Image 1 (tube, rainbow, N blue to C red):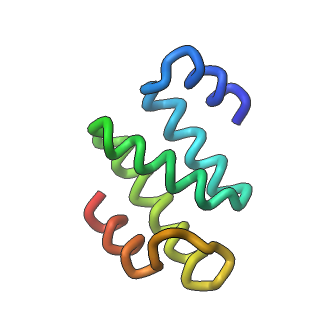
Image 2: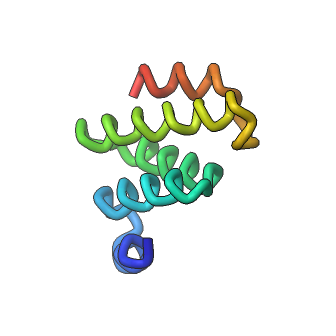
Length: 86
C-alpha cells in the first residue's frame, strides 16, 4: 500500500496504483477506502483490466456488506449490480 500511495502522490490518476491500493484496502478490511478507490477508477474511465479488478473488488465489498462486516454508503445489492456492470 505504501508504494501505491507514493505513486498516487506523484500521479493522482495512476490507474495501476489505484488498482493496487483498492485491492490492498479490501484485503485489510478498509472497505470504505476500497470503494472510494473503485469510484475514482470509474470516474476517470478505467481500462478493461481496471474494470475487471473493480468488479472483483465490488463483489468482495458486496460480500462484506451482506455479512455485516462492512458498513458502507451503499447496500450489498447495489454493490453486486455495480460488480456485474463493471
